[in-house]
Image 1 (cartoon, rainbow, N blue to C red):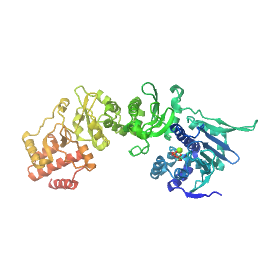
Image 2 (image 1 turned 90 degrees about the vertical axis):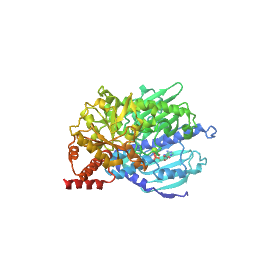
Image 3 (image 1 turned 45 degrees about the vertical axis):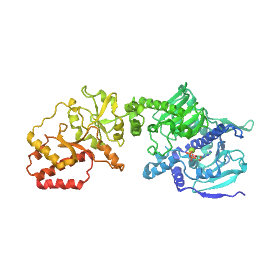
Image 4 (image 1 turned 60 degrees about the vertical axis):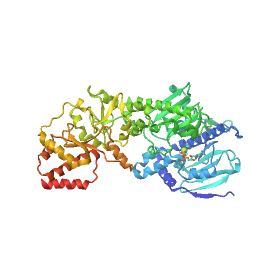
Length: 623
Ligand code: ADP
Ligand code: MG
């Protein structure tokens, strides 16, 4: 009698099992997809082993995935002759949730419990989906490197809280998954039903999937192949339907949403490769986690599966792209490390990057689709402006902005459109960055531009300030931040607004301001930019911007305070009022308030807000 060892599932696993059984009743059939996908992964690993190990003394066998429907015992057995699992592997793989996608999915559920039902269907729920239809599951497996037939492992569970492990004899290496169906699920024993499900989800799997047939006349069993088993990407484009492309995407990504667009290319010549690249419609949960190794393409070499998540073929700013690369130019025994410093990898990366940028450009032709893309991946794409200077112009072409004239928070204006709409005498592309749309769209810096009907790009994503440091021109036009001094501004504004205030009084006020604010400002001068605002802060042409200094401070860096140029609007009622005041003490407080107001508008915060409030209260009392 073999010894049974009892184990308890990890608590996360229990949670997942419970959730799945209660949420997936409308989409039960996916267990077939999941188990076939596992079998196919195991066979891919096995194939790779055979090919990379020339001295292997094991005989190469035909690879297959077999489905047996046993109506007597109400069970389905899905077998593969893939790599199999050792005892320790089975404990790790089928007792815990190893898959990080599933883990973060679980985390997200705690916050959004209400959406469980829709959400769970969008995930590759993996092996545990067997329990949606079964009340008992038995896995028999032997690792391919385990030559002793007596060292197989049996795993058994009812999916409630525990599983047992027993050692068994297993003749062939590989894995059999036996599902003992719940009474109400015996429909799944009909072979037409299984065939339809396999066709629907797993037709493109390159390994034959076979079902057992019984020939009543001759009373013999035989195996019949039910999938096409041809690598989709090797077929002619014209022979592939959109549905096939979409299903293949879902198979390789475990994403249940359709991709937005894809590009399938066969390249021959100095480079030889096939690429099938997809833009998803939703980003992966972990897209912002840079440690996450879930990015990259599925790599095949001469049709042989080599590895998942080969991120060496895409720059980081295109990490949302999914797909496969099948190349003839790399050796089969290539390792991740070898890929890193390989010239072939670099040239493949260059040409795949070009293809993806072309694909995104193609997407811009459809505005509504491009908005879906831009909302989901725009922030990531913006990283490319700094990361990939060679393709900077191409990437800049793909950026979308809000502006004074678009007058909405949606980013849907391209740089080319901006340039087309520029008046003849405008030479620069004007922009302004701030923390939020509300702040940037109401900034007093825009007053002069609004008055003169000149558009300004409004940028408020976190990455924007950093990006604009790298983006200095586009199609020969320079970028100009509207909160920096601009010698050319007077070329495009109609006229300098002349002060109709007494010049003498204003000059006295200017002197007074310099005296009160001292080294807090670089200098004070009259403004012709302002209409409704009394005072504003500007920055010298090459000085560090407010947003940049905020980024540095947030990163804990000690940097000297920004040296502002303080401009006052001589036509504003408040400025006139102050210039007419007699009481020196009062004027002092007013000047400080003016400055701090401008600082608040520019920076969004003050070093000492209470001090500012006290001054305002003081003024109220005095008036
Ligand atoms: P995932 O496939 O996303 O990793 P699963 O829950 O489907 O998650 O499977 C968990 C792990 O169990 C797999 O990663 C694999 O290591 C192992 N596994 C499952 N089925 C098989 C199989 N038929 N042969 C070998 N290993 C398997
Ligand atoms: Mg799986």
